[in-house]
Image (cartoon, rainbow, N blue to C red):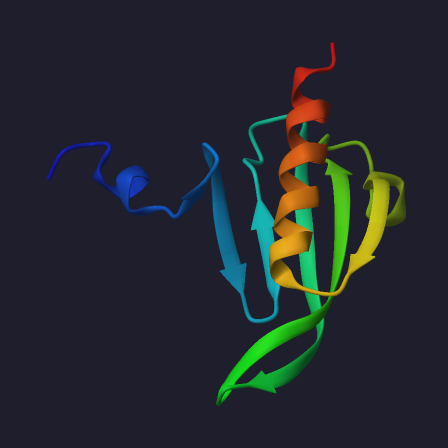
Length: 99
C-alpha cells in the first residue's frame, strides 16, 4: 500500500479534511492554525431520513496553549448542515489566509 493511501481515503471538502464523530464534525487539519467544529444540535425527519435542523458552527484556534472557550474565535448557529458547511468553508479559508 502506498504511504499516502490513508490520506486519500479521508473525506475532503473544498480541499480540507472533514471528519465525523457521532454528532460532531471537524473541518480542517489540526496541523493548521484553525479548524471548524460543527455540532448537530437538532434533527428532523425528511422523506424518511434524519437531517440536521440546527447546527452549531465554531471557528477554533488549534494552538496548544489555548483551552476550551479560549480557542473559540467565532460561533454561529445554522438551520441546516448545508448552510453550516457553507459558512465553515468561508470562515476557515479566511482564517488560514490571514497572516
